[in-house]
Length: 217
Image (cartoon, rainbow, N blue to C red; front, side):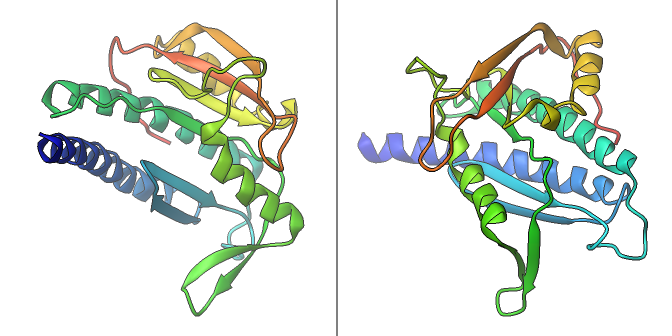
């Protein structure tokens, strides 16, 4: 019975991750048409991705602020669509697994270099390393003064250190609310300190599954 249950769980995880990865792969191809960038995707107990974008990655194409705003808009819409996608899988999964959606708003530039031996980008400098530490720990964050996990099914969470980092996301959130894809209420939350990281805040949105949206950047 244990082996059967384990197999059912592993199959469910695989189905969810496969659906999410296929969706991200198709969407990322469209995202490249906005501005050339480096997209790093890797597996944990779910799927994580990091987008590195800026003038130094594509030195022959001027990097305008509007490009960054369009990336923000894509992130929000893609997360909402991924939540819908995995919710639609629930009836077919051997074990009905729900997903959570989390974005890290990080407005400060990071220093990166390309490691020829591993064929990937790596961060440099203490501030950039702090970003990597933060990225790996926020999915376990608790709301300050509670034992409640920040990430919950049917929500989209945006973690940030100061209000400037979420300012460019707000117009896109308002648009999703007006279109009925996100419910009107927004939770503004303080987070319990993480190891080596303090004073984080989060914005939590509640998703509305009434219909589907398209993620045109």
